[in-house]
Length: 103
Image (cartoon, rainbow, N blue to C red):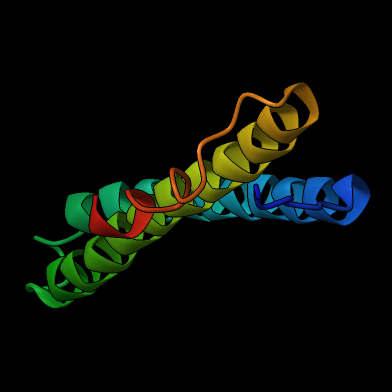
């Protein structure tokens, strides 16, 4: 006797789009931070290092935002792939969502 996996597609697709939008927002914020970091590093000499310390702090935040955007992007793609694979019957149970957090 086989196991049947049921899925309501629309809510899953909406969650996938939500992760996609989150990834885009995080990338945009990271780009803004990158510009601020460059400006602060250029001003570091005039500010006697205060700007450089702030630039380094913001750069760490930017790097973490970029990593989180990658995870959100992967979750979005995994959800979209899970829906498509389920619709076509070409899915493997447990083969999604295992890699995003470890990257």
